[in-house]
Image (tube, rainbow, N blue to C red):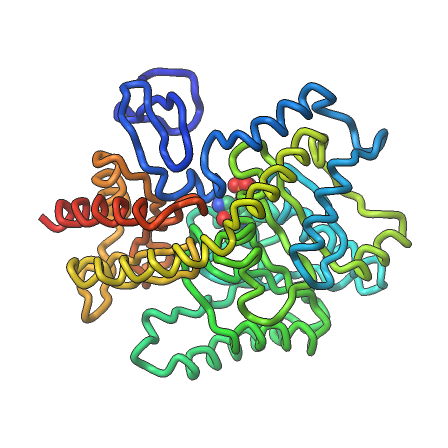
Length: 437
Ligand code: PMP
């Protein structure tokens, strides 16, 4: 397929998709691919699930779209209740949108409107991590710690204050505790330098996704960030667009750390690829303050439409019925172990990290020194192409800051079995052998 009218990148090797089932996708040439990354870490319950198809078609036969300022919709009310249920904390208000970026924009706007409404209008700056990814719209991009994406728009976006993300791989042999103390101190210094009373929030992905290849943080780090927010009166905002909805073996990744955010964003796994739906959740007291001063001034036409909400409800139903949270935890542990064994066989695999079925590999040219491949080597692209040729899809990203290596995410649907994982590992093994030749 060349010279077509699509604006985004296509190349001569791009297969044309035909159909899918479970963890498999077929192209029009009849090649089968294992979806080892759930598309863009999105198709959490696998492809073509009959329960979702039926719920969507029932909803389509009733009404696909009604506008939220004209009608309430029972499916939106029910889905909001379910989300409040599974977050198990103080996040008792839900605002639906259509994408992860929109959810992050909504979080930024709610935080700023909250401080304006509570007579603290100076609080409009955000602290976020580098590397990180928070979306493609200008606000979300301003939070994103990925220089080449963000820099061109710095003068017209909110451009947050960037602080280093913990790097547990490179500080493994050194003292991790000392490293965590250092990054927390750097974060506090950044807050104080900007003026503590100007900071609206600290934004982070509790487990790194596309930007860091599954980088983990520690409980003490999370507690430290929570304490900084409490000390300086700013909000803790967790971006779980990628890590939420069971991906890490709990409904949300923050639930591994025993602390709770003030605002949460979720997206990909909520619609699981069937329909775009995302949400921003917040503590009621924040929303109450904004409501009292005239309501949340923000919205998107398709936000929370009945078809989107019926899809989200059906996805949660499948997650519960098929016990996909516990499968994510169980198979995630198995996948992690098998990736550790694979790393013993291949010198280019520097680190295996992640939790549940959010697993990442960092590629290095020297395992001892942890030296990354040079950016021009395109290690991330090479290994992804080799895997795709063998019928395995994985999610690649180039090294972001010149310090860490390129990485790939292995994030199959949460329905994956141990046998599927064995097949994924064997295809990865062949791909890494070819990569090292
Ligand atoms: N936040 C995170 C953590 C993400 O991973 C992404 C998407 N990769 C986004 C925000 C943006 O989501 P979307 O592409 O749906 O706008």
